[in-house]
Length: 289
Length: 165
Image 1 (cartoon, rainbow over the protein chains, first blue to last red):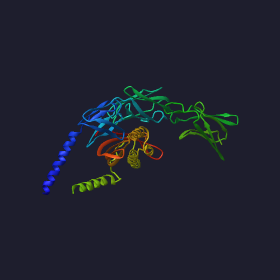
Image 2: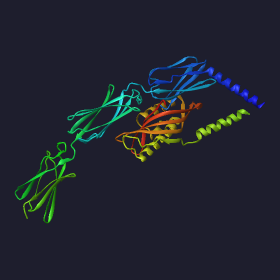
Image 3: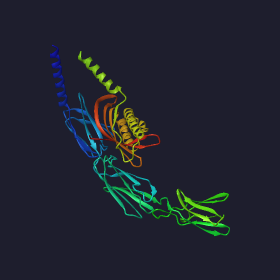
Image 4: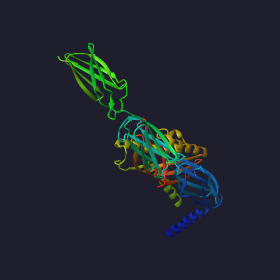
């Protein structure tokens, strides 16, 4: 008796399922490119409501079963995974499909860092490019991104990198000469440019000369340059220190046209040194005790 | 006899489905994430903030309140979700997203530390409600790609996009 009941319940369930499937039938595309027109075919008769639901977009249409429901170009433009729900008067049918990003990249989000750095730095500049389509979807299909760094001096550097998960990145060396460089990321006809200021590095060699100036000493550095020969920026502080019997004197002087000048008392037997940053210059011993 | 039993079963299933708040989370080893070295604390913060973003998304789409996105979303992701919520409100629709399982893989930490990309194979349930009437409940498995960027105190989701697996 119980087995019979279970059997007939099963038959009824299968029959009702079949009936529902006969009433409503959804034919969906597997994937749709963002912004491209598409259609959904339903079977059966009567009125129903068609929902296309995802976090990125939601659509609702009143449809006639048995007819094709068309969606115009641009109706569904955000890439993502979408549920399709067709609610008829007596049954509901579900499905799903994916909207993929458009194949044509139309926008770049280009992050280049730093905007200012010393010359002659290996892998000192980084560039990251995120590639988007016209609907601001990350373009997931691998795409070649060209990075190009060119400035007033040095050979231009170019790298072509394929995107992975919508992004490509690279590292570049700063040039050996100071000046602005254009850092360009390009994909297809789309490009984005950042300006990188390459400034002289730390002073490489510091040397001063001394000559008497009345009762005092006139101190003057030679032009201060970095290891690539670029003039260190004016305003960089150079410190002169004089040590003599019974005391010490220190003078901080900013570079002016690449040279630091000052005067200090002329003590016999004094030792005068010069430094800037972490770079020590030469020492001079003045006169005799 | 069968009808009450079926009803009880469906109620139990619903309770089980919607009762647990905490999704199961598995994070792939982060040793090989680069090019910037990813510290453990950073990885932990990114995953925490990303999962929190799912909670915000869920509340915002359920209540049709775009303001709930402010804490965890910025940029394109926030704009798109806001548009969805506004469209839902216009149509009288609500959607309830309950994330049940995340398999997260951090795949990129940018050299300057300004963006992190992750890929999440996520399983969640969606309920569609039209004018207070539940239309369907669906279980979904999808692959999400997210890009997070740092703000003053946390990581926020800037790109949030599902892709076919």
